[in-house]
Length: 65
Image 1 (cartoon, rainbow, N blue to C red):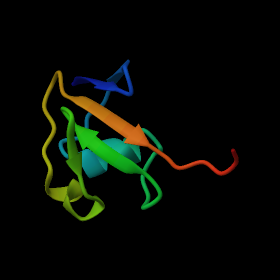
Image 2: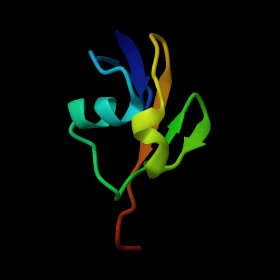
Image 3: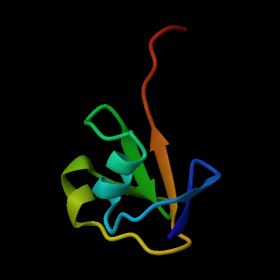
Image 4: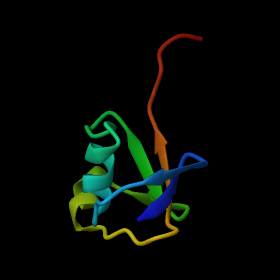
């Protein structure tokens, strides 16, 4: 299915947010996620379904200033 990740169209076969992160190589506890502009905690990603057209935002902290 086609979804949008950080503004870029992506094709994934995942059915949950956790699976999508893994498929995109962005899994782990060091990122924050939002699905269709709603924050999704890490503990809820495996139970959060995704659908065609969904918008996922992935934010990772960076050091420096």
